[in-house]
Amino acid sequence: MKIKIETAVKSKKGLIVFPLFQENLKKLPKNCSEKVKKFVKTQVKAKDFEGKDSEKLFTYIDDQKTLVLGAGETKKISSKIARELGAKIGKSVKAHKATELTVVLHDDFECFEQEILEGILMTQYVFDTFKTLDKKKKKKELEKINLVVSKSTKNLRKSVDHAIDIVNSVDLVKDLVNSPANYVDSAYLAKEAKRIAKENRYKIRIMGERELKKLKAGGILAVNKGCNRDPKLIVLEYRGAKSSKEKPIVLIGKGVIFDTGGYNMKPTGGMETMQQDMAGAATVLGVFNTLKKLGIKKNIYGVMPVVENLVNEDAYRPSDIITMLSGKTVEVTNTDAEGRMILADALHYGSELNPDFMLTIATLTGAVSVALGDRYCGLMGNNDDVVKKFIDAGSEVDELAWQLPIHDDFRKKMDSEVADFRNYDRGTGRRAGSAKAAAFLEKFVNKKDWIHVDIGGTAFTTDPKPYEQKGATAHGLRMILKMLEA
Image (tube, rainbow, N blue to C red; front, side):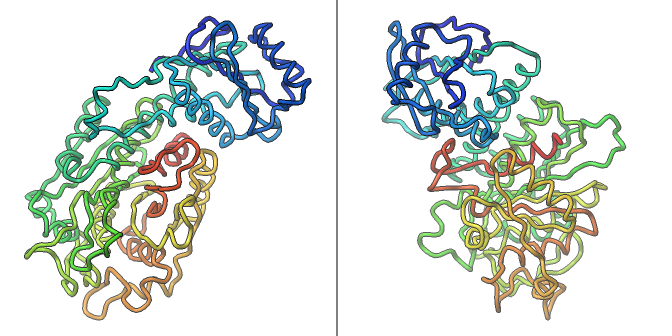
């Protein structure tokens, strides 16, 4: 995708779009041609166009497809509205089957160019990797964007590159999460991690079953026992801080390639999209795909435990007692509470890296979607200041988050009568399930600052936002990047 910044309209190909605030109608952008100005003024005079948020005008001017979009009131502009405006432009491109787009921006859009571009680019995503019947039909795709502004600056170029890098990583996460488990398995994720490490010159360590047995990572090994493919613990290391001694941030992503629920098998209707259960690991890979490009000035580890939760004669069972990497023992009361088992080992591993703080991101519970629906992810942790910063970062990029409490009673519910802990509260497990899962994870953070992001309700959707599609959303990626930048 080529994106050019220009100070005058040069191209007469494809679609040209003029997004206008209500206040812009009397003073159109300098780059509007006289014919465009006359067209808009005629429509305004006839009261057929007032610049309201939902309004559109379409015409041909000098044989070029021309679209005028209402952007509402200037005072109401926000990053969310700008991104959704970009989504409207992006969808218009697809509707008109244009391969080239020119967007003429009024000065009032200054500082929101990145969000507009993100909206345009994110709507272009199509998951058709496994389509064969349509391959012969050559589809028209957007190839070039001309961004026309009154003044080109280094900051604007940086914002444009920023948008490209972020959306490329969003698309990577979506591809990984949308792909079925017979294609994206543990070996595939390891290969993808190696590619990212090589391209960015990160250090990488990939541990298979042999190494995990030496490490005594009991939680990861137990969950994968029903699978004949190797489990993995993938560790990426990025050094962006000025000092190598600066404490790192550890990002931990749940990588359950496919989750049947094990012997506590998921019901019919609950398993068909379980390839999404590695969305946490995919998100961490997406973050690392972007870190160096954005120049994040932090030392960061990415830790991804990768397993499959299947059923055979070797699979772990309810009532099994597992000795974890930390040496603590866990009574398995539900094999479908597998994500917390592998994250617990990863948390202990991460705590030994002397972190500033740790973050776990996972499609951990269905309970979070009952509590918060499909627009908010759940946030929990042991440092309210860090939690608040993540909530604020999420609001900036329209990846909403809501803090859930970890009550002391929830912590007690995770104690076991026959082991140190149990992985699921059998008595009231369906109540406050997200917070209880976090209460279990908290037992393995070893007094380090830690935050948990539960994307169980937001990683995959049937009700997409304006700039999304059905399926994977990459929710959490842009929130984490915004936080790391700050």
